[in-house]
Amino acid sequence: MRRLGFVGKTRLEAAQKLLPDALYAWHKQWCFSSEGSLIEARCTEEASGTGNHTYGSARWHKAESAEGSIWLHSMCREDWLRLLFAHLEAEVPNDQIAAQLIERAQQALVNALLAALGKEPFVALVPTENTATDVRLSSRVGLELSFSDSCPPLLLLLDARLLDACLPAATKAPPLSLRQDAIKTATVTLRLSLPPVAIGVGEIERLQPGDVLRTTTSLDQPLAMGVEGDDGLLKGYLARSGDSRAFQLIN
Image 1: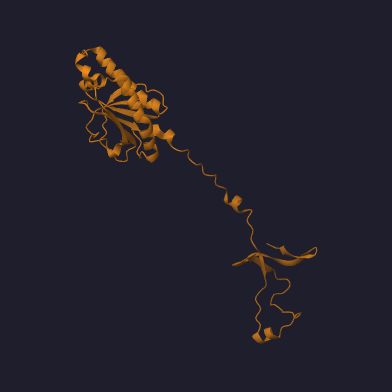
Image 2: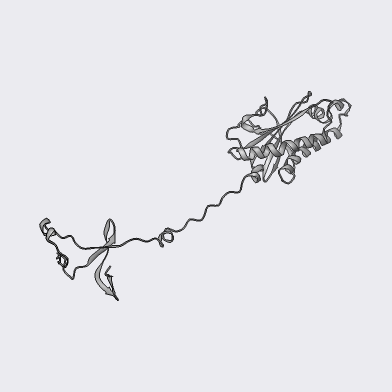
């Protein structure tokens, strides 16, 4: 089962940088070129298609590894002979040696792409019944090697995860702290409050320094201490600690 997803800009740019040169090098090593023949290698996302060709009706050979797979379009024997021998095609005998040469050229092509990506050579290139009809959420890269002569283009598909090594290293998020560890160094301001006292406005105007305001709280009743908005956080009595006033908790 292939992985759903998308190729992404970084992996596609890496494929465009690495893979066409590998195709050119393979073509130079394995193929005769007709005089004036030109080749062009293109690399695209599978979903966008490759040239005017579609993948759905094609038959494929597949090279599978633990890191991803490569699909090679299964051209007919005559097309492969035309690709490999160009104008010398008619001189190639139709025998087992020619068939083995085509097979070795296909293996070398796939291994050249894997080598360009820093991967180990594949084990086997086998026919596959699966076709690439569904390109939604594609996670494969399309490759096309086109020629100016009568040879049809060479088409390949690569799993995008073969290009994962080209992605930037993921930034590791710092580990989350327990809530009590995160807030234990925070500080709050505690306020001591007395019960409210009702006093006339006229009496306020006559207050002088040294006057004593009597509350309705007796000495044996605890006072409340807390933060702004919650005065009932702590309860206790006024006390003395050395030369400082203190608050002795009772709960």
